Image (cartoon, rainbow, N blue to C red; front, top):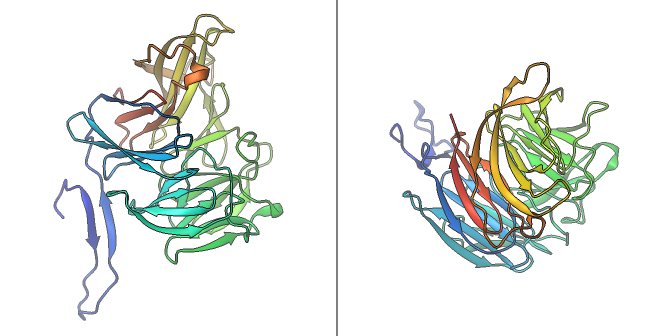
Length: 361
């Protein structure tokens, strides 16, 4: 392995006795490989994730019974592959990126993330799915929403080492309907409330393999996003200006309120926790759903507007909208947002296109 190399490498430690030791795999992503680009497509994208090692985007189309792989070609182009799968619900990668998983109405299906070939199928009980990536922790657990595994008495998980289902006890005897994991896999947020109303969350810490409730008085909305190490948590609720918490769940600040004819769409946080990225939809009037423009606003979460706890906006990026998509409620043009692990690229995926932008520095 040479400095600057990208790919997957086998790592081991030699010893003076010449004894055989266990080797592990180290995946290394290329530094800042993307240029601003766009890939048009049609489909009802529900869930997606970024594979930095393969420079690929994986996405589910529940309505179309398929999942897609958007493969970057290194020159600003994207090659799109589709694989049919009946009743796809959620998608996730193992922590080492070597295994791609998709949950369906009654199974956990494992695919090769490079070739997209089906490797194995594991039986699960039926569930409606989360519309967000499956969470995994660094101790080798792929967390499964309640209802997938009927034998679970707490939080169900799939053990990536033994390929067996298990369960983790949870306070108050609750089950889990939603999960969010930090990119380092050390922290997993979970909520017993499913999909529509998630007001109470618990915290799983891999270091202690324990689950605890949030401090009294702290509650999250629908869709929290974490920095890589879990030290910053952005609480994205429906249509509001998202508050930001630290790893001890102290509130640090929030996005400023929009003007009357604008609304926040998709929002996320950068891996280092210093940038908040938000789609802003502009409408013809305050109560209209007729879309007149879309942009991405970037906020510095370390700086505040004078006299407030509102974060400072540092840049805006105009977005391309589809001419046949004037109603944001009908076509979900805001889509989903994700920031690359190096913090230099913003991905936006909706039902019209995959768009790639450079993070303003």
